[in-house]
Every structure is written in structure tokens, then in C-alpha cells.
Image (cartoon, rainbow, N blue to C red; front, side, top):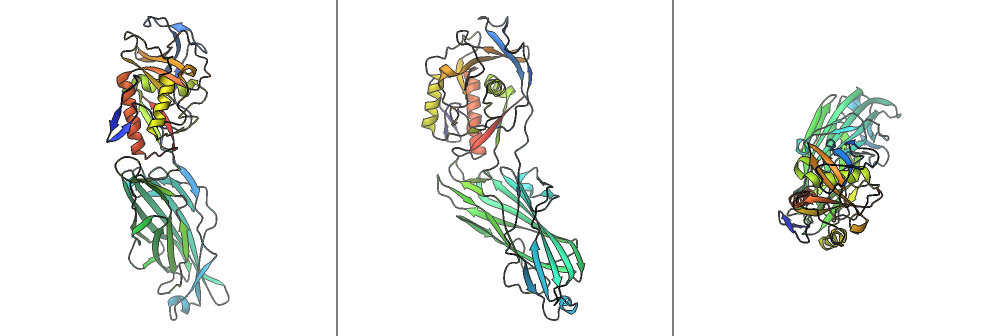
Length: 441
């Protein structure tokens, strides 16, 4: 594109169309090629340029979900004496001992479709799954009622489910906690459960207990409540925090001297006030996917798709992209790729208001290759199909290039750049954050 086309999105200065997008795995696209590297010319091309491929966008990707084992931080088994005169003591029970299951099962959690729905279905145990803005964790804790000889005279099994929702424009962390007594046996008929939460680093708890006091639960009963956390961040800063839980699980009226089960949220939450106008929080380990529609971004989107399909690094698909947040450095990348004197603009009869659209994007650490080393292509929509032509007959494409320059209408070029900027804010991409890119219909 021309040398200077600044763009502002919601007060965030962007470099005309340098991206920070995303996509995982291989590109799902249908390709119809004329030979391996076809040399068929189109009658619509007055320069008789070489036809490289006919390509079709793929389907949207599901958000990346990461699974992790959740092993509680218990220092062995924690036992609490049964109250004198209690039903459990009369049955011969002298102590109720709590321990967590020490091995995760393979069955996964299922995250809610909406981050604010606070629901997740968990069929395994000691498992956590998370996406960019939500997580679901299930932990199983067992209790045994023992007599003076150490013999077991009753048991209880409890499942804790923690559903966390993060906000792209809020540094408040909302969580729903549900505990269920899934089973009891013998002389254990009821369990008393209380829970308190905390968080590390600059995080503060604004509601530390999901329910007031102690919940008395029998087999099959559940108790649900919410807790909240908040990060106070000055402009330009970020902080990593981890959520922590201390539960007291005992028989009714017992008085434990310390928490009987404790666990962490497995992975850190990152909150920042460095992207956009508001602070927000994400699970940084879950990479977001920039989805660009070919029907909206046209030749720009098809330039990126062709590179993913035919050039060796498959940026944004086989190789994740990394956001370059420094705009001066991104401008330098764009200059090296598009303004090294080797980009020959096409006439309006071929591409109206032709501009240089580089990929990998200038606002990535993968961008900045000198344009003389890039493949130059012209995506043209003909009879409802995207045909990809070699743009410069004097610069043959070798399919080993480390970058591509698309001949793209300036309007589509800057529109795609604007979406990249919105995506960076929406997904709270910081410098070096990885993301993928998917081109959809």
C-alpha cells in the first residue's frame, strides 16, 4: 500500500494494516490447481500473467482449548476430631480424614459456550480446561470416618467444580463454585463444607466466600455460590495471578484447626492495562485465532491464505504469528517489505488502486523480510472464484519464499489492517503473544 496510510481504531494507533492475527493447525481450504505450479493464463489478465492456483476459504475454527491436570496442594491426609456426643462419635468414629484424589482421569471438561454463563460439564476429575477468557476445573475430594483402631466406618466423596469467567475490558475476575456430595457410605450421612478463596500477586479478593458459613450437605446435594477478584493496574502495566482455594470439610459441628483441602487454579491469569482503553484479563496460554472473511477482506484475505497453503512456513497456521507491539519497529518492517523499490504496482484495469499488502504482517516478529525476497501475487475474483496470479513476470515464484506481497485494493488492505487492530484489543494481545490466522468464506 502507499507509504503513509495511518489508521486509528478506538483511539489505538495502528499501522495501516499490519496485523497481529491468529489460527491453529493446518488451513482447511479446498484448492483446485492447474498442474503442480500451473502456467495457464487468464483471458481477463491483459499482461498474460501466470495462473498459480484457484483457492477457496475453509471453515471457522473452534477456540483453542487447553487441558491441564489439577493436582491439589495437600500435605497428606488432614484429619479432624469428631465432636463429643455427635452422631459420628456415638457410632465409634473418632476422626474424619480428608484427602484429594491424587491422579487425574483422562475425561475432559467441557467449557460453556458463553463466558458469562458460569457453567461447565465435567466428566473427569482433577482436570482443568481453559480457553482465552474462561476455564473449568473439577477436583474430587474424599473423606473417611475412622474409629480408634483406624478402621473405616464411613466415607464421603465430594466434587468441586470451579468455573472462571474473564473479561476483555474488565480486570474483575468472576467465578462460580459448586460443591456436590456425590456419595456417602456407612456412618457418614452429612458433610459440612466451607470455602475461602485468595489470589497471588497484585490481585485482591472482593468476595472471598461463595456462601456464608458452613453448608451441610447429604448425598446428592450441592451448594453453589460466586466469588470475585480484582486487579488494580496502572496504565501500561500487567500482572500474573493465580487463584487459590482453602476448603474445610468435616462432619457437622466439628472444628478443624486448618483447611482440610487446598488447591490452586493450575495456570496463571494475566491481567493488563496495556492494550486499548481498558484493563482486562486472559489465560495467556490459550492462543486466539484471527478469523478474516474472504467476502469482507477479499484479495487481502486471499493473499494470506495462498501463503499459508503454498509457502513453507505457513504463518498463522503451521507457524503461529507473534505480535510486534512496537509501532516504530512495525513501520520498519513494512518499509523493508513494501518500499524496497521492487514492488511494481499493477494498472487499475487489473487491480484498482493497487497497494502492497505484506504477509507475514509488519506488526509481527515474523514480518520485515526484504520485498525482493517475497513472492508477488495478484488475487483476482473471476466468475465467483479466486484466481491467484503471479504479479511480476520478471520475478518468478519459487515456492520457497519467506514472505508474500499481495497486490490488493487499498480499501481492502486498510480494512484488514483495522480488523487486526481490533483483534489485538479484543484478545488483549501483548508483545510476543502468539496467535493464529484462519481465512473463512
